[in-house]
Length: 289
Image (cartoon, rainbow, N blue to C red):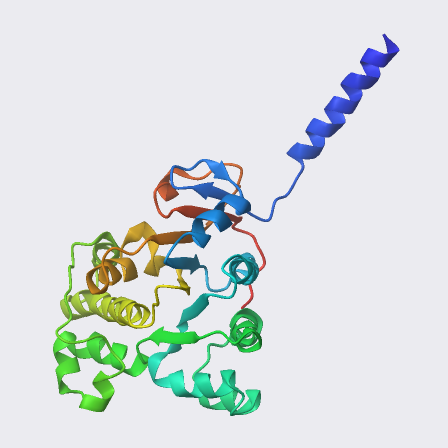
């Protein structure tokens, strides 16, 4: 009898301990079922392109990005190419000079237009590429040209010089305003002016198209391309993926999305089917900036 009571008490303590656990994240598959990091690693290792959709100020995203990068480097025997939304195409030369040691970290940080959270969130990825002799592609359009689209629409890009056009996707830009990624932006701006409502998603689309074009142009058959971007740029298999599938059809693509929820033991219905893998993070997680 005493043994049975002790067993019940021990089980109660174990169960209570699980209930009081505070996981930093949980990983779910496309259908909203819990899965593991090892399954995510296996699936991404078998892809041609992986999109890691992040929440820009979330430390769990940035930690997992670094861990996945290191693990993919090992599993692919170094056959890995990195790329990021956070670096703009006209800074590729500066980035390359830093990676090959031609310029100092100080010069690189001074001359490249780096994000405010670069030091904590993206420098570890770039420095891993430097230390591992990996390519790192600055995939995004220079922000000044995205601003042209916001002000003038796609037609404004035609006024740019031939040199400027080297840093954006080829013109004319195909655009489908009915895609959820763009339609949701239009719907959310219902109270704004007509011009802004039309051009803001276009400015988003030129970023997506340029990132897709730069990914397509730097893929090789032996390497996996791992791309870091805001989750909205790859959620629901649209945005960058829509353009990439036009520039280079037939690629095996795996997407990772990041979401914040009140609790992470189950995935909120709204996020099911958002990506091949969804990382759910407590919404009160500390931010990096």
